[in-house]
Length: 308
Ligand code: SF4
Ligand code: ZN
Ligand code: ZN
Image (tube, rainbow, N blue to C red):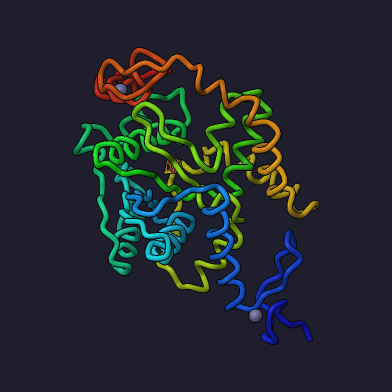
């Protein structure tokens, strides 16, 4: 009879990339330790840190919220949740799911209402920018709001739920396009510069399949609805390609990530430093242009003229 690698209990999962079969208890320990090791290996958290976690209500950020909550005492940091109400009319369930999780854990949180604070919603911007993928507009908005909130409220770090699957999908996408200067942005830790708060990705070495199983075993409340713009997300295509490669050759994703960090990033890291950073003329946040991408999206959306 098959047994867990660590005990005599029946295994519930076989992790091909690690050649391990584990029972429920040891799988849960394994996953939490994997995140703990990632945090330590990349020096992500310091004692006394004030950490802002961006929670979208999906399995990844919700799992990260629960694990960081568990680790907050051990590493001595303060955790605060941020969820953005993007104003997507057909997709609102994630906000309540995020609130349920914050309340269950007793984690302080903020719901940031984009329309109320900045006068436009993601739906408004998508209608105006007909030439752009909704997810790329959304990404700019989310990055801006999260950073601005963290900066204004003196957070030391921003934790995001990017997984190994997300990052390797993005690596593949950017490498195929020769966007080499973008690669350092996908690092486990992106250090503070100008008014950018340090970003950490504690799930960067964790597979989404494992996160899904962990969330199921722990019965977290997760938003299973999909954003109506999701089918347009180009990155999901590259993630599927990486899934196919991983099926043929287990642990490719982890090797891809580590080899890029080790062999490519040191050569291109300097590019980020020499970029000509200015302060946005509208909001004062760092940008490489006169007006930052967020302010441009806002300005054009409020003007209401379609960009084709
Ligand atoms: Fe934003 Fe795209 Fe995610 Fe929808 S699927 S929330 S548009 S990034
Ligand atoms: Zn076991
Ligand atoms: Zn700006």
